Length: 71
Image (cartoon, rainbow, N blue to C red; front, side, top):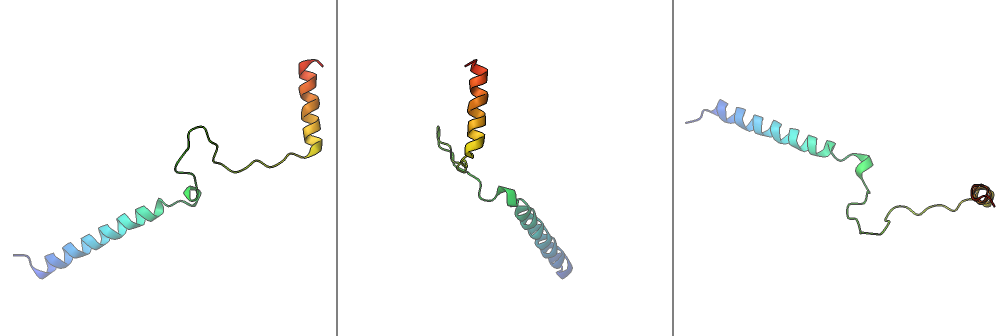
């Protein structure tokens, strides 16, 4: 037969263990992990849309590409 002290000790240990497990579970909810893609579609990019490059950068890239081709 358990005594009242053993019963209180056991319930206290169980409560501390439960709080520790919950704390570890919540610590795993890192902000960087929120909102990320969890289901991938083969052959489909699901990330953010690219932003449009300014016209002067596009022209510079075209010029560099033409120089590399030797045109």
